[in-house]
Image (cartoon, rainbow, N blue to C red; front, side, top):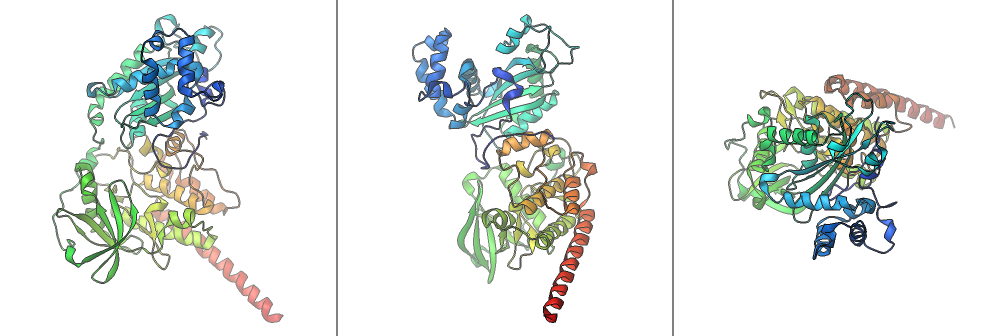
Amino acid sequence: MAAVEGGGVEEGVGESSSPPRDAAGPAAPTASGGSGGGAGGGQSICSQVFDRLLAEGNEEAAAPGFLSQLEHHFSRLPTSYQLDVNVDKAADVLVHQKVLAEAKDPERRPAFRVRFVKIDEADPTCDSDASEDGIDDGDDLSVRQDTPYTHIHEIVFSTVDKPKLLSQLSALLSDIGLNIREAHVFSTVDGYSLDVFVVDGWAIEDTDGLHKALEASILRNEGSWSGSSHSSAAERTLPFQVKGGEWEIDKRLLKMGEMIASGSCGDLFHGTYLGENVAVKVLRSEHLNKNIWNEFMQEVYILREVQHTNVVRFIGACTKPPQFFIITEYMSGGSLYDFVHKQHNVLELPTLLKFAVDVCRGMCYLHQRGIIHRDLKSANLLMDKDHVVKVADFGVARFQDQGGNMTAETGTYRWMAPEVINHQPYDNKADVFSFAIVLWELITSKIPYNTMTPLQAAVGVRQGLRPGLPENAHPKLLDLMQRCWETIPSNRPAFPDILSELEDLLAHVQGTSGEANQRQDDSGAKD
């Protein structure tokens, strides 16, 4: 399976999602462990780049005011960008500047540049100097369509930054048959993205043809660059306009307590309603737009249709301005994510299996009712005071049988199925993949791909990456987990089959434990 290396677990922006850079050779920007940032001692990367451009006789660098422009460029981008710059390839920074400038024009988004980097294997007929220098003049490079060698190209994008942009760009590249080897993704302080991809799959060194193919792919998906998220026919036909009913609560009977958590579009509060402890999910009115409103109403629509021991119980909602909120039962045990990762609980096998069985029962129920969760992860699995685990957060859930195939990418990268990342049609087996990652979390008490950023993890999963198999885990549990994260969705088991296996294993483990305790009691009695 593919391996991707990087740093950082935080879900923030401005991270480099860079797998190992040796595939692209010296033409691609590299971290500053070698010729990148270390050459100048205490000198800043910006100054090193400026000096290198002057030494190379670059006319732009010699122009009045260029240094100020260069300093402004670096100030817009995170520190990780400076670490990624290769001073030996200082001209790359000029390309980044130009692409970012072009992205300010809405008619040119996404702005991009293409260049040939190298041929992956040493080709004796190839002009080695041209390959090593990364020259992108297609007319001067011989075309070898029939060689077995892999041609590597670099593509630099810039557009308005927005959620899930990596997946959208990945789908764009996949649309023309390109494979992502590396992705370096940065966000500017003023709301733009700078995304550097190293790819293979374009069989010749020609860059003009690749440029035209990218333009054609962008035109085919023109609507998705307008700022709204791409959605499939299955999602556009959902009944977002839900009329108020018996679930519309009287706000005067709700008492708000302390804030429990805060998200990008809303806040979660502890409260009481008719004497019952409740959780109140409040939508922030200043962030309200059509997409957020649709997700809010979709969650109301699904929650009012479900009732199961292992699904968070819906109490009511307020869908009338000026305040919008959803009320569910209060889960005092918190999330499995906090229980495992923040409270540092290491689960014994019986407890682990019990939690997994709870999740499976909830997911069996949802799938039987045609509901795909689409964001199954430990943070969306909540526990009550008795440690009963329940599936929660249906903001991106959908009914499967709505006509058409679901293709829109949604969820959280570390738990996301490859077909969802790739914008391929998917079904409820995407939830099974996510469950496998949750199972791995419970076994290891680790965050998935904890040495990578979320974007690095997404690129890795596209290439076949899975979390490392934990040592000393029950072999039946490992076998089940690996079947659940199979790349081909149809090869993954369904939740009823998963539940049956887990219940059998739990019964066996509890029986073995009971027999051991009985033997210990008998031994103590004899003493």
